[in-house]
Amino acid sequence: MRGTHRILTTIVALLALQLGSLVAPAYACGCGAMIPSRSERIGVDREESAVRWDGRTETVVMRFAVHGNARNAAWIMPVPSRAGVTLGDPELFDALERLTEPEERDRFYFWPRGSDWPFDLDHGDGAGAPPPGKGAGVGVVGRERLGPFDVARLTATDPEALGDWLRANGFELPDRLTGALQPYVDRKWEYVAVRLAPQEKDAVLQGELTPLRITFASPELVYPMRLSRLAANAQTLGLYILADHRMEPRSPIGGDRPEVTFAGRIERPEGAVAGLAGERPVHLTALEQEFPNPALIDDDHHLRTVADTPYRRVEYTDRLLTVGGGIPVWLLTVGGGLLLVAVTALLAVRVARRRPAIDTGVRSPV
Image (cartoon, rainbow, N blue to C red; front, side, top):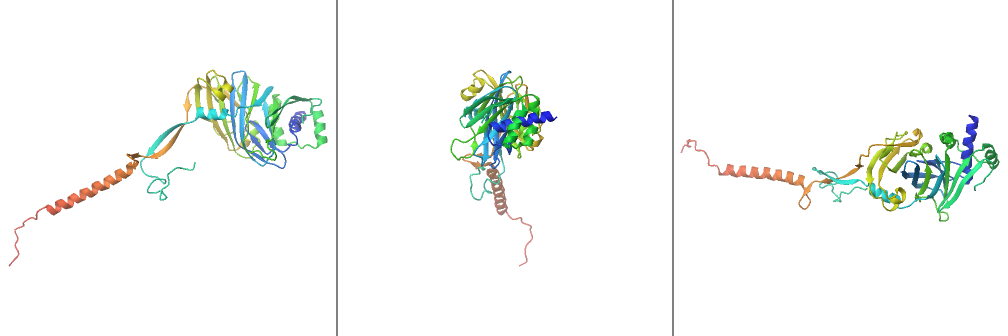
């Protein structure tokens, strides 16, 4: 047990060493841990990933939307085998969103609602507001500068040599990250460590970051998620899966049930999608999942093949039922009914007035 803990400590320390003085984890994102410096904070608003798996090789393209005051941060992702890292195509997610956008349908209602006349007294339109060191037992597989990212691919085999260096340099290791990494250590996974820094001087990390593309060999489609259990806030995952068949997670792994928002066959991938999946037909599955309590995440997403049943989410727009130039049907119905009642009453009065008086034969005395 003590040896395992030392190995875990070594791996976390190696990541800290490669990425500078980023030693206090604050937030986590779906498949990795996001680490700012001690005095700064960074939060991940949304993580989107596109995964391509051909049965042997897996490619993950990730894009994060972040907020906070961090001028730089580190991101750590475990991978089951040696990984290659490049920049992703910034057009990819826009293309996937277009392919999977929901079908829009109108749904009509009869009676007026709060945004309709006569309830809308304001006459609104009714629209809703929508430095790598290398010593004995320390392996730096590769080190690249990719745009705003400093990428290190790491291994570690000798905990003592690295541990001595860390103690001499006063690094404080995040205990929670150490525990979260244990399953990956047990399976002898490697790690991709990325240092993120804006290209503009004194700028902070805000908004959507440039996508990263990571490729590695894998006999199964797996999406690492365990490190997101460190997140302090609820997490949202958007996942696009490109494979030979429709694929879905085997279990919720501690979150809400994954929701399929699109499943279908793309006959001729084009542009950025073809750059990831190739130009041959491929099945695309889009998933959304919420993690209200990230601490409950207990596994990675292991995805399995399911029936190739097509599906597209439908979004309804509720509209008031009208005819002609936009006249509400309810108004015609109610108004017509009232008019009919009024006409009927008027006719009854007229008939009553025209009816002759009945002669009873009684005469008044003179």
